[in-house]
Amino acid sequence: MEITAPLHITQTLTVLLLEMWLLMTIFSLQGIGGAVWHGVKGFRNSPYGERRIGAITAVKARAPVLGGNFGVWGGLFSTFDCAVKGLRKKEDPYNAIIAGFFTGGSLAIRGGMKAARNSAIGCAILLAVIEGVGIGFQRLMAENTRLDVPPPPPPAAASEGSPMIA
Image (tube, rainbow, N blue to C red):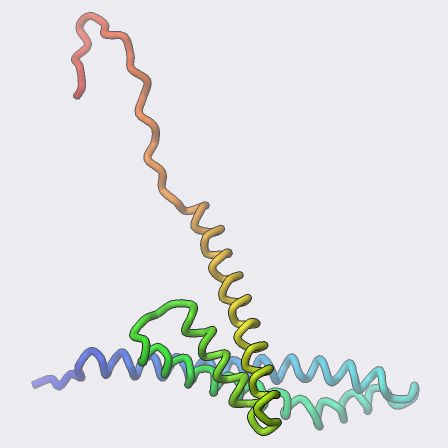
């Protein structure tokens, strides 16, 4: 006898696994981006004879912090995104915008209400732009794959012996 889980549990587990993979990917990419950013910054801010050492030191000190910060942002965003999807029971771009609003506000709450409000609005605007660009690219790419019905052939003069096709 085979035991199977209900479909909604299987879908929820799949979504959670994808979210975890996404967070690990985001953390890795931000760690690499942070290494490049802080490596260049450390190289430029070091004296001429010690630029290589300065770059390595800056990467060791700051790149993991930047990757961790972005991982926290990604984790909060994913959490809020799933919560908003669950509450609204819809899958549309507004979910990401609302989740971005909550993420920006919650990350800046320690700076006070004004900082949280400004950060929430800024993050929501940023995600609205990202969603808008994504929708624009989807529409642009959909134009190339649209299947149009070919126009009907022009009516031919009825000739003798040719059957009419209706």
